[in-house]
Image 1: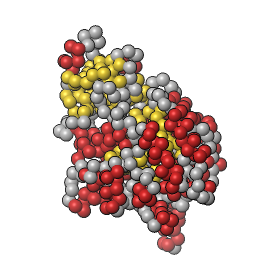
Image 2 (image 1 turned 180 degrees about the vertical axis):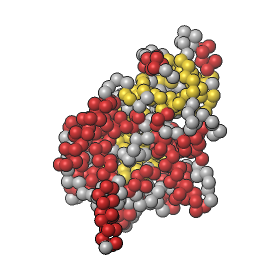
Image 3 (image 1 turned 30 degrees about the vertical axis):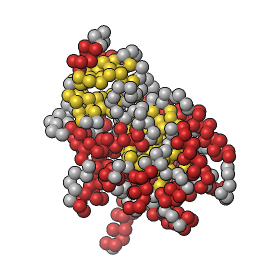
Image 4 (image 1 turned 90 degrees about the horizontal axis):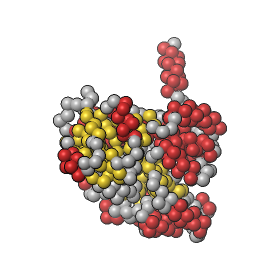
Length: 472
């Protein structure tokens, strides 16, 4: 496409887009087109058929491009972007040493800027939806909503409902009152969708775990909870309740279609059955497992059991193609090599979890995640006329293993072009990055962040110094 195509694609009004192919759940459909109006896909089908149905519209030809659903990040922490690189080389449960103090040091401007920076990275990487699991920053959560809206990304916005630190298991009506107000606050918002959140099961009383599940189910929303992620968390639950975290949630009536269980890496066979039987969704976060986890979630086995799965970045890096590749790669290393499974779900499985499955997991399955009539027009235009993808034999597999964000020409959310060739279309991305760099230095310097390991440069210098000492 040439620069003039940008103006056509950015224009208001109905669009009839005719790429080389449209990615459907069944696979790529060559020669198909889509008609977009009022932020939604109004029609999807063979290009000749749509041209006949809408003779008043001039088709926009998109040679060398695939139109595919936008990626859904089923687990993010938008206000942690200032410290994403602080997690490198660190052991598990870094939330106590890094994320709690870092988010606690954010004020309104820095929280907004951090969230918008994360949204920018996500959009650049092809994510049209992110599920934010709740911030620890002492700001109104609407600051995060404003950042998402201003960036132009769809956001499932969590409100943290922790109350166990109050030292008892009595009712805390203010927590539930805030939860109800949050669920009502964004009713009808085109981009922000309310959600409830509990950091980990032990962070909320049993009454609150049960009540938030009920409130979310009634509102058609989700409750996001980090579950069975680290050995320490499993052991604390066993000591406190005699049950593992997922078992504890089941015992208080918190499992069900409204629960989005983040990570779920340490699962017993019984817990897998609980997930399958209750319809609970899981956010599979493979990069987080590689960077700071104790295990890799058995996503292939969960898929076989019919467990609802989305893919999440956990705020590690906002690149949808690399996330899908990591999802397959982690399964192959953790499970496929030991069983001789050279496919590990095949390419379509991970594209499914990254798009339609992710939308379902975060409670938006009826709204986004699929190129279909009536769904919000959240999609990508991907350049497939590249050395990586032009010689195509199996496009779903190639998108998973050879796709990258450099091939994303445009990102659309709710029918509106938000990114063109990696840059926002209606706001200044570089200016935001410059301001974020300034605020991040001040914020991290003022936070009581504790890292176990030195930076890689300092570690290298220490290693060389030890080598010289040994040699002497």
